[in-house]
Length: 502
Image (cartoon, rainbow, N blue to C red; front, side, top):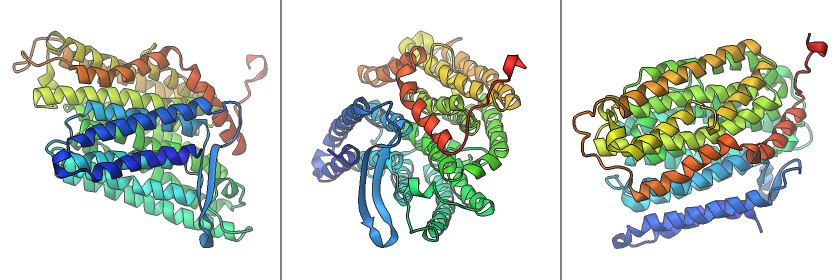
């Protein structure tokens, strides 16, 4: 059985089925989308169960000639890093559908188009993590922009059209730089034995340092925009504020991970020497992102803007862990991607429910919610503490591994990075105090608490946050071999402690 192709095709088939529904049956679209996404999630779990932890390299490999005259193949395969990100993606999609059961209402194109776009996006998300042909990866990388653009522009709020265009322009600019780099490395492969886009063959090419640096930058800038990393982050707050909560979950929880995933899979694997050359600059940018995002988050008055800027800070941690070039840093960064996906999902979903009830996304309007909507308030509190990386919740383990892994090679950077933890306490606890405690803000007296459907949606997210906080071993057992293999293949090794503690 071709597991990865099946995993990609199922959402696409669901989208086709929804598009054939008659107009008077458009309410069925959400049920078809939900059932399809549940089947996809179950297949993803089956793949995870059949994944061999101790087996090196890519698994579930599929390879078919696509455009033979250019050496382009339909090639898929996953290692531990890709597996956990795919698993996160397919779990979040049905949660988003249940949580945002009425999000499509009021959009430009109705329910059918909304769920068609969600399922097409799921196909693209799976494909971008599973592709092992660089050209195929680029196709998925760019194709993801289309459903996200329409989800923001067609179903968002406020300045949704401007936010959608800004997102698209930034992403297209990065994609064009990466395309130029892909063409460059393709030409080089033709001069060294035959044109190819296969990632394993491309990683064996001999490229002079100057050329490698330019190619590296083409990939890295595209991924830094997608992540996003300072100073290429400015599209994110606008997109997060304008998108529906469900779209924001997929945007920040999954799509942005394509950027940091690409840094591991392509920047380090294909250009190890350039990765080493640019590491000091990238570490500096990561530190700026950590502190800048945190400071901006502290001053936010809009709840969606707050979550967006906290994510910029978190992506700084992830990038720092990746370019620390240590196994602990890499494993921590990958685990951070997964943990951030779930904690951000919880924050955006609960913030969306609060905003819908209150008719406002301004933090000052949420006062006293703990007395009026206690379950909703406590859910937001747990999600906020996870973002804060409180011990016992999932983000703590990943943040700890990133800082420890960074400290072994860049101790000054690790120490500066810890300031982000201090600032996180401010940007989470201050809005929590304003929104949940204190006197009840006029207009909040009769707000309804969390509904049964909302509890069904948020319960698995909170369960994952707590479970991985106490027992991250299952994910780390999958991630660690892939992280070690990536660094070893690129010629990196962990620093050796000085003998006798000197």
